[in-house]
Image 1 (spheres, rainbow, N blue to C red):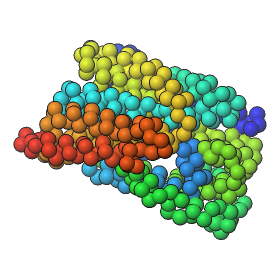
Image 2: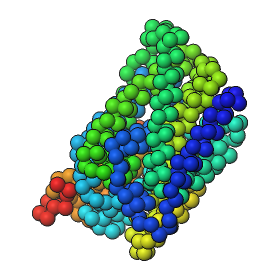
Image 3: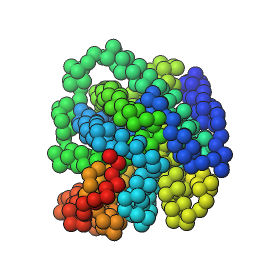
Image 4: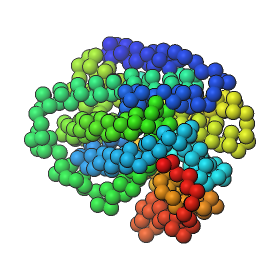
Length: 463
């Protein structure tokens, strides 16, 4: 890293602040304006915001593609394209038509207050950006030599500053800049690698054979588990928030379909870069730093700074968005719904939620050692809790009874959490019965739906 590279990075950070605080939202402004930006999100802004927000795990992708090669595409690509397509097909228009502010609004409308609050707590915990704080900390450790704890705290404070002031509009404005930078950096890196070393034949001669197989050396059941974890897309708050904020139903659906294509292109570049990193740097101690190490090897002054910006932008966009979703869940769906505070106070309590979510996320980030583990563990508990109740809150006439929906959320999450913790109770560190924790929770939730649902003649589905 040279002075020029650092100057580029500092210019980016300054640009984020300028974009983020361009219009400060007053504490008494309506929740709809603060949380959804007045529902005026256009198609280009929708795509840029969703694409950058949902691809925050760039170092995790680098870690996985370095260790397992092309399998990265089948684990972190295909299952998420499929579930995003299902979201566009079954949920995007209905979410926009619902005129809700948050996911728990729909849970409240269909199942009542207790279920909405229980769902809010799950969503709050799922959207804490611990994995992305860990990535920010790792990047700052590389850039400035800071210890992880300092990078985590300072990276969090930086994001909170402008999100606190500008709300959803600040998130979208900064997402657009970050979208441009993330693609620009990886386009340059991919072109330089192909030009310098050639294509498939170079990589194939220098990586383990399993890196070019569909499984990457992992058992098939491990790959299959990620297809179930990807079902979390159907309860993904970032998707719902963008759909609620979209200018129209057409923007919501088209935006997701275009985003899928954008993710495919980006996955091609990130997986390719991970394979080149393994081919050129086979002895890395920490695979999560593979992209950074590759940039060290490949890029000249100035371009190096631009590529680091691509990494920072990818992570930052997700940190900002998830902090804001967690905070709005706390302010509106937990505090407001439980204590019936004045609606004019929702913006204030959302800002309180920013501070609370930041504290919890930093602690969680420093507790975990692997980015992929955070995704796995949080997804394994949250997905079984919300997937079936939320999906059928928007689709079909058959609904869980309110009490059943509440029990389903609480008990499905509890069973999956206990199963997740069982690895600490066995001598070999395996889950009970070697069954992934997501499955017991999903099965229990399905049982609740089959046995405790009824046809609602006065269906409240969004037709």
